[in-house]
Amino acid sequence: MSFTAFILLLVASVAVIAASLWFIFRQLKLNRLRESRIREGESFVAEERQKRIESIQILLKAVTVDEKLTWIETSIRVKNLLDQLSIDLSQHDDISAFYIITEKTEHIPTHEQWKSLPKEARNKFSKEMMGYETEHLEHLKRAKAALLDYSFDS
Image 1: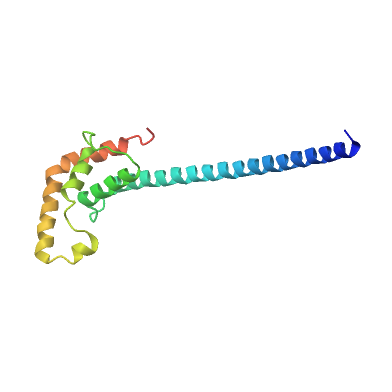
Image 2: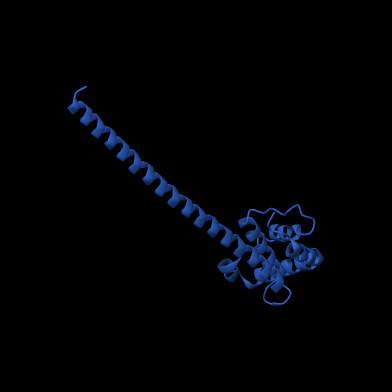
């Protein structure tokens, strides 16, 4: 092997090693960045989960204190928050009250649709909702106590 061929082979080897080192360090940097983004995402998800849990607890504590907050509205909101948490407690003996009330009132218009209803229709729906609250009041109170004691960590 000639000296020139040896030098060329040596230069090519050094170039391959340098390119490999550059690629390795680049991949390590990208991996650290990816891991950082994953940790940030996991942190965000955990914070949002905790906010929903706190919202459930606030609603449950306010339902008997705030006269404007009805059991119907609380049930619908709690059920939606549980859905957002991907928790299905519809088979739970006590907590199922929120699911029952939500299911029974799904046909009742809300928000702008409620406002645009004729007075007779609003009265009819209001009586219907009060009937559900009266019929399920004890079950709702048990559901409130059970959900306030529920461990969302599982």
